[in-house]
Amino acid sequence: MRSDFSTFHKTVAIAILSIFFTKLCNGQQGLTVRKNIPLDSIRLSDPYILADQETQLYYMTGTGGMLWKSKDLNRWEGPYRVTKTDSASWMGPKPMIWAAELHEYQGKYYYFATFTNTQVKIDTVGENIIDRRASHVLVSDKPDGPYVPMEDPTYLPADKPTLDGTFWIDVDGKPYMVYCHEWLQNLDGTMEKIELKPDLSGSVGEGRLLFKASDSPWSREKDENGNDVPNKVTDGPFLFRTGTGRLGMLWTSWIYDQYVQGVAYSESGTLDGPWIHEKEPITPPNFGHGMLFKTFDDKMLMSIHSHQALNGRYHRVPHLFEVDLSGDKLVVIGPYQP
Image (cartoon, rainbow, N blue to C red; front, side, top):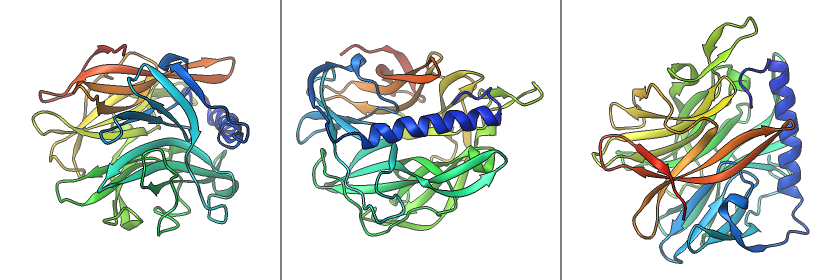
């Protein structure tokens, strides 16, 4: 949401988005699968692409929880509904789904996503009335699902709004979820980690802070008095290693009214950091929530969405950028047309 809005306007924007995404996630009874659809004709936030070696297909998901398939990244087939959540769980019968990701791990496929139950309120901070929202993990034997719940009903505290969980195996060999604690509650969004069980069926212990939104040198907003201050938003973490073994993290925030993609690097080479942020964003303005994947012909790409605010609604479309990871840092080469 626009970071230069007042808190009231931000809350209104979130409410509008909640209604939109609820309709998007739940209005699938008459879902029509389309074929031969160009990538730039798909409207999708937070696009995440899994290049599955076994099927030799690309699987794309994101906010809304639907799945698209492609042989060549150019033409896509979908959308497909792939999740089967428990209606008796904290998610309720019709949860919103944000920022879904697909990860292959030890012969199974895992669906990391943010689920929101708008019927349950967990906190009020100032003018922010906060829904029950959390990062969670589902599992399947196939990349195209169905993805179903595992052992633990929750991975993160019920009174803490979390989002955009992603997956990483750290140097200790243990699996982790890296996620955002939402700024609506803590007023300075954080990036955190929590250890996962070996089969990813639940979490172990408590979350630990990695960095705060205000640690970034590039994200900015205006406060209620018009002063220039750090932005509050942490969004869309994705972990990677460079060719030299350096650990990096893509993450997104805002520069006033522009949605932007930044990157940070861990000095220790582990999730514990400390995390040092690059001074400038790595993509053009109004691109964000990126992730990296390698094509079947060994080209490294970044999947990301463009962002426009049109008539009070967000218009977001998936895009691909070619990147170079061979050196000590990620270098964005430019837009990629499959």
